[in-house]
Amino acid sequence: MRELLPKNWGSSSMAKNSRNNREFETFKREFKKWQDKFGLLGYHVYFKHEPCGSDSYATINVAQSAMVATAILNAQITAEEKKHRDLKATAKHEAIHLLVHRLENLAYARFLDDSEIVEASEELVRRLARLL
Image 1 (spheres, rainbow, N blue to C red):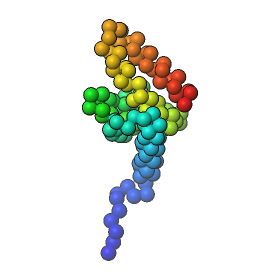
Image 2: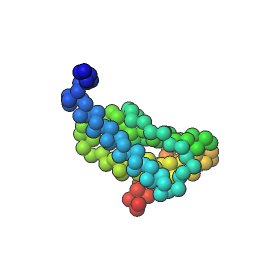
Image 3: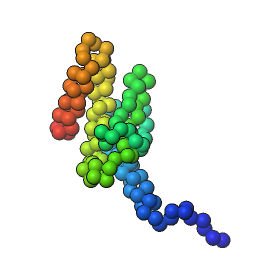
Image 4: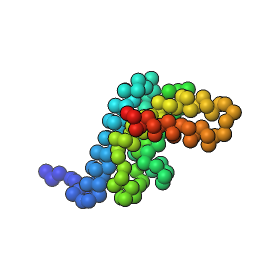
């Protein structure tokens, strides 16, 4: 009996898919490590590997009241950008966003300019990333 293989078996696209899957698994594993270290176990985190905008390696969306988050690794970046992307640092960066999300969420309820909140949050995330 003959084994049926996918049409693109052995092709470079399969190798690319395998590499992308390994990268995604690394991102998820590293994110979960930092989620655990930060004690953010009350959040249920989903992971996606899909396009999430041209200006970021990854992003996270959080529904604070439901304690649910979706961490998205950008699947649509250029080969040049991929050379510079550090998956572990990217995962840690997104986990830090989850760490500060509640504070950020509360800040949006105050009488501040939205851009000030985003800038302050990003500054804190970058500082924590350098320290951890």
